[in-house]
Length: 334
Ligand SMILES: C[S@@+](CC[C@H](N)C(=O)[O-])C[C@H]1O[C@@H](n2cnc3c(N)ncnc32)[C@H](O)[C@@H]1O
Image 1 (cartoon, rainbow, N blue to C red):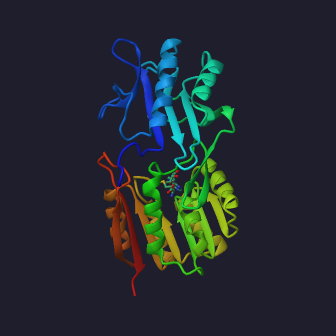
Image 2 (image 1 turned 120 degrees about the vertical axis):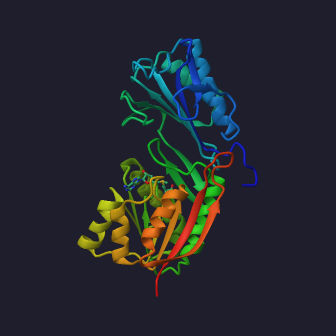
Image 3 (image 1 turned 30 degrees about the vertical axis):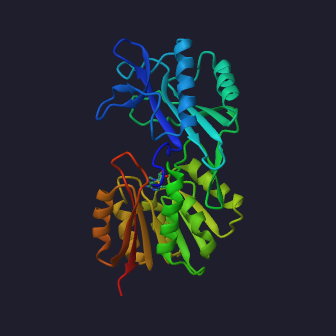
């Protein structure tokens, strides 16, 4: 990445208490839940950092408590700030242990007066004893509850529960590589599996006859459907559900097959059933994108039975960390 700093469009800071019982906000120390206070992280967007700092200072000033994992007391669990790098629109999600935030109106006023780019503030309720950051329930307390961003010339709606790549500058490069690997002619049916808000498929859709996306988070599928409309794409369909269950359904019940499949699973890689189904339906090409080289290697070995790994490249998606994104393309043998 040419400018490998301040690149993240999503800041996620845990809020807790320190050894003196004072509220703290920052990052977890490696392999622990001890919070290291941080007010300037060199990979976070600077505006997002500023907003997180302001919320933290507001909480301190007004004695709003940080979450205590030991006895599940305290209010604030996480502060999440997402920014559309191209649109400058910002969405703040405050993860709380219960919905009542003291001085909530004042907090909203302070955030929005200081930062007119803020288009949405959402409260997310998480009162479970869990490492999962977001709970299931959201309350929009300012704006419409979502923001937009652009990747290439395509516009995307992003809501609080939806996945969106954290480094949009590098994401454009990654998606261009994926589309280049797919060598689409305009006559192909493409599947975008683990599609999130539909970004890869929509990015590739100008060169495809039909696009079908599958994703487990229903809010993300709602975004994907809207994103297709936003970009005047009529040849797209998005299905909510697990790839391992929905993919066989598509084939058995509807007899729909893909010429090219884009795979972009979470870090744990693809489910074995999903790989077995793809081995059965034999798409000509599989473009496999992964943020975890270990599970990518494991899965590529399973595809080896019927596919040749033709190209693989890495994308510097997470500078300053030990992580890397990979993009690979497999060709059906013979
Ligand atoms: C690495 S993200 C990729 C999203 C999208 N392709 C993008 O580039 O923004 C992986 C996505 O897979 C979804 N997911 C996780 N497990 C799934 C499953 N079993 N079936 C379908 N989607 C799943 C997650 O919710 C997440 O949106």
